[in-house]
Amino acid sequence: MKSNSKTISELMDEELLRESSITSNFRLGKELYESKNVEITEFTGAKVSAIVHGGTSRKVELILNKDFLNWKCTCRLNQDKYCKHTVAVGLEIINKK
Image (cartoon, rainbow, N blue to C red):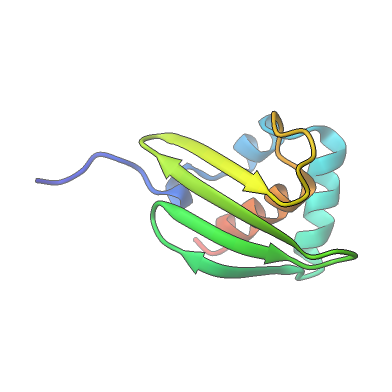
């Protein structure tokens, strides 16, 4: 039986990143991404793990639970919105499509 669930790659787009982050985190995350500071360590349909290098390296995990995307970052800043590290990983995912 075929699953109708989407993958992280299918759910991730720039609109989601902009809506899920504050403006400064989107801008800073884009800078991290464009500076090639994102290292994907695991990439499956339901989980992406990455290390974002920069001043201090941070570990980011995106985990798909049904059609809801959970995230965590070791920076622990404002967990209600994506931090710059999560945005950088999101942009890396988008550009791997």
